[in-house]
Amino acid sequence: MPELPEVETIVRGLRARLTGRRVKAFVFLSPHLEKKQVPGSFRPEIYQGRKITGIRRRGKMIIISFDGQLGLLVHLKMTGQLFLTDAGQKMDKHTHACLKFYRFKKELRFRDIRKFGFVNCLALTRIEEKINRDLGPEPLSLSLAGFKLLLNKHGQKRLKNWLLDQKIIAGIGNIYSDEILFRARLNPFRLAGSLDEKEAGRLFQSARRVLKEAISLKGSSISDYVDALGNRGGFQKRHQVYAREGKNCLRCRQEKIIRRKINGRSTYFCPACQS
Ligand SMILES: [Zn+2]
Image 1: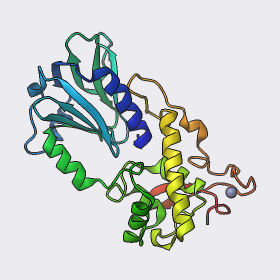
Image 2: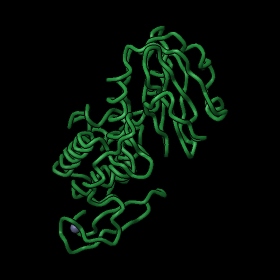
Image 3: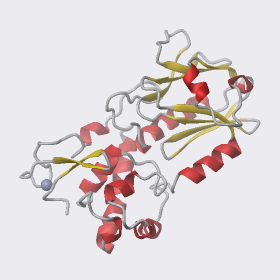
């Protein structure tokens, strides 16, 4: 699933190329996207003639703003892709929505093999309400004090679950939670409220460092992820624990990385380095 660094990379690519462009047509190509509209949603036709005024990320979601206070809220979930391609390029059966522009050769497509993702057509105020209700703060905007407050407030959660809970902190998923905990040398089963000052500081710094480095490398390409132009990311080469079960730990070089399930999610860690 694309996480904060992947979604941020997509958003930056789209923002640079689509801001200010006017919509020629917006269509859903698959009935499942219609079914996922929430009450009060607009029809796709309403976007025709509107200009894109901004594109931003919040957690793992993408918000496209149009003039007239309209927005699109996009969640890629497991296998969703949002990318620009030449208008003449053939579409496959996994392409579920398409946005065309005036005076621009490329079009924006939403492709999603497993169909867990959605594109909701809502007023910007509704989108704002929804994201503020569903999402905690952004890890890269949070202060150390704010971060510690959240650790204590949700102190009974295991660190892995604490990092994954979008309502506590937004944007981190299975890959980056493992990488963050490994670099912070913290065991994923520890309770959030059990960290001392030093450990909380290590977790905070590790989250910032891992997410920033991953953004600078344009995310991790595992399975379907590609950026707005169809390019793969580079952070998968820097993964130190994720999907490395049975391989030697890159820090102590003695223990092997193990995999355990926490709340049904595979979690990779070094039993010696992470305490
Ligand atoms: Zn180790």
